[in-house]
Length: 112
Image (cartoon, rainbow, N blue to C red; front, side, top):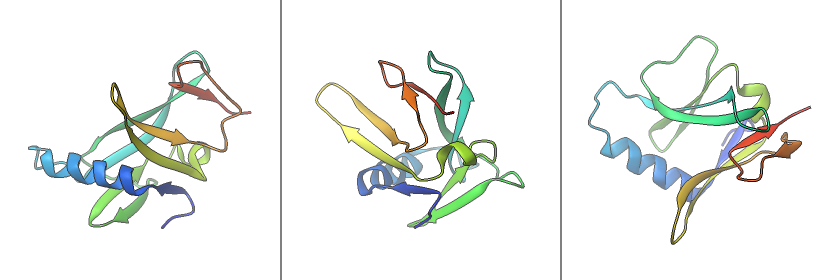
């Protein structure tokens, strides 16, 4: 496992399910990043990855690639990615020790 980001068993299982259900044969993994958005300043992004850029970090877990966007690495060091499956909502959850504040809905975060 990586020191950059930790993936819980539930998140790993969900990512594996997403990868096996994708019909797009050009998908090589899951891309994780951050963007400037939300009421706290930054929000997490997740999408199917079709390429690995030169400075991206790549984690290989159980034959799946998790690609961390190079511009997001400094914001994600030490983060745990989890997946919560509740009665009314299912979502990936980022437990980020670098976040100094989050918005009320939990969709965005800030770092100092």
